[in-house]
Length: 427
Image 1 (cartoon, rainbow, N blue to C red):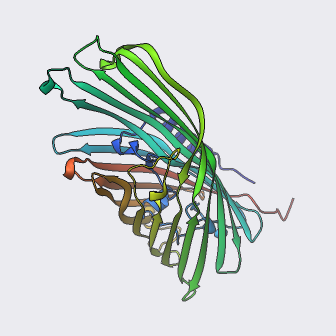
Image 2 (spheres, rainbow, N blue to C red):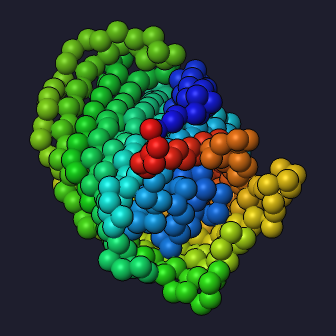
Image 3 (cartoon, rainbow, N blue to C red):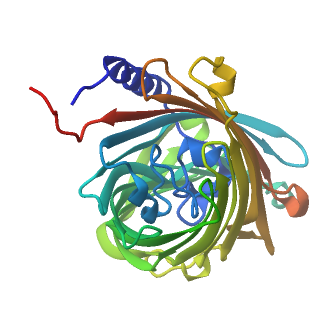
């Protein structure tokens, strides 16, 4: 087993960039449900093709959205992938706009063979993010009274550590399953104060929810060969609903002040520590397909559905509905030789997606749209590749007094393939 020292350097650089730059998102819509959902098709390769992943498999890339895809890992290679995402967002209403930015570690994935018919994968994925700070002012001038301000602030992140396994049933059929440990915390604060008076008591409520339980998902893929180089892959996924264990702590206090974070506590109104409960993560299913000519091009589509109307947190529903998403995408690699220039050795990708988010506000279910491009190029004298992608996505509308969010995401990904599992013929 030989490890390329340059690969270790690449990983170190990516981790340092993330640690130095990380901050939270800014999305008022993350107030609802479980926050801003990230999905399982977070791999740079999948993102740059509009998110297609259910019918996609590649021996040099890890695809956690369909665990059956692990079944085509090379029997002698170890695959490691990681990436960081930089996001710039704009929040628009009819009257103004607000900008935000964040940089986060996007994923850590690895895959390797156990036997010729059994392949496995481990990884860390984001599940959702929470980040918002909203001021709601109630004009009380008609009552000859001071204005009331309600400041809502939330932050948090839910992650998943998974262990996935794929089994080769036949040369063309494979099945797989992921065991996902879902964990994380959301902190939700509400501060009500009187902006024009320091003598009237305000109220602060802090609610922390900690989620920690196992979630499972399953997948299958089947290859149909039309010729030696052309193949259609069909895929399907299913994740049953889970009542995930959770704990909740709630603290309420009265206070003086509140304006510009200047305040001091007066009395504790209530305190409920470590309440046991559950959060319903609803059923998810989908299907997809890819058609490709080996080593040259590939095109595919996905359809995903999740039953979010069944969502409850500690027995309480929210303003969310069932979701669906359609993704289209593909990639192209020019025909080349080892002496070809770099641009001919690169793989070019593009895609788009459209669907309905789980947010239903003022009688409107908010839609989501995204378009993406990306490229992959090899690192000289190694099996490592660098993946770059850019995505524009939008959610919501400025009609009906709502907000439209627009994001531009840039992801830098690293894919390392090392030949670990082989026997030496000579000593």
